[in-house]
Image 1 (cartoon, rainbow, N blue to C red):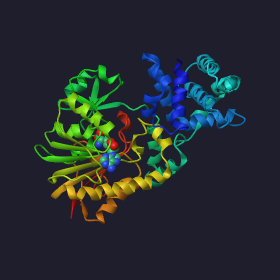
Image 2 (image 1 turned 90 degrees about the horizontal axis):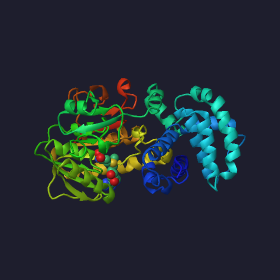
Image 3 (image 1 turned 90 degrees about the vertical axis):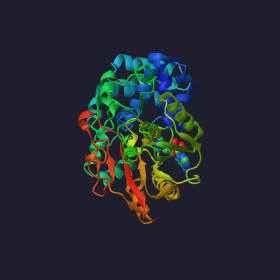
Image 4 (image 1 turned 60 degrees about the vertical axis):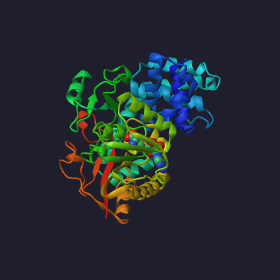
Length: 422
Ligand SMILES: C[S@@+](CC[C@H](N)C(=O)[O-])C[C@H]1O[C@@H](n2cnc3c(N)ncnc32)[C@H](O)[C@@H]1O
């Protein structure tokens, strides 16, 4: 099976069938028939194609007299994959053009477009790079999303858009000895104590993975759990816990964790992660809106489902799968989840609310709503999370942006606030 055909079919699964790339990778037969380097190449191709989707399409549109017919799924996707190789990956023209045309000829669905592809890709290889390089920041985001970010983040919006174009580094959280693991993994320790690997390798081949010494977790995702402070021996509820990055963090510091999530499939991954890291937590499959505990908890971490627009560096497909209406409907759900958490806390205990979204409605908006409904903000202060002071907002919450830490490779966009019941 051809890696370009697989990449094109993954692109079709995301863009035409609305599947998340992670799911498409599991479901796409042409991809699953690939092994080793071909498999990695197909994945890299579709990821680059999605990350630069807007710019690649703009360049292609300059050389196409008219768009391909709506139903020309394979033709359109292969053309996109060919142009991605030329514009993003810098593949030499003879290889990118020749092999894309050959891939088209191998497919009944795309054969009719092989000649057109040959002509268009030749023009892309000659004149495309200059157009590609001249496109403004934000060209790779759906316009509705970039408009929102300009409204919310002003001058930082182009920097955020720019930061999303880079392949992100791989961060891991360690049980202990960050500097020792940084050395063993040829990485560095971030200002907030995550270990950052310069060149992502297949993780299960790295030292310490099998022994469960560390787990993959973006440096930003590692911050919310730490806002709870020292939870050794305390009962902590991790609401919306799977696949468990924050459960592992809390359990590793000695908290007695109850992990609740409504997805059985994702809870299985959480259980695997607990087993590998030899950490323990009580795992419960339940809807957080309905979950009731025998006893209230000393703290609750609510890492709510969200649009995930803070994670586009790793999941560029998400930008194209979300719709503007998702922001409001998720914000409504998030407010309900915060309200449901109230009954699960001991008097005076803290709730940390977190989302990996850059949309203010899902972060600051949900907290503003909570403040009207019996919650009080427990302001985050300098030093609460060592290394994270620059992320503290004027209101006393945390907000990370992909444009932060530009000199060491950025981090995901996250929002976190600490609340107590009035
Ligand atoms: C952002 S992810 C959580 C990531 C996790 N905290 C971690 O650190 O690995 C959100 C999770 O919320 C779960 N979820 C969504 N709606 C839920 C609900 N009503 N009740 C419980 N879990 C829910 C999803 O299954 C998903 O696993």
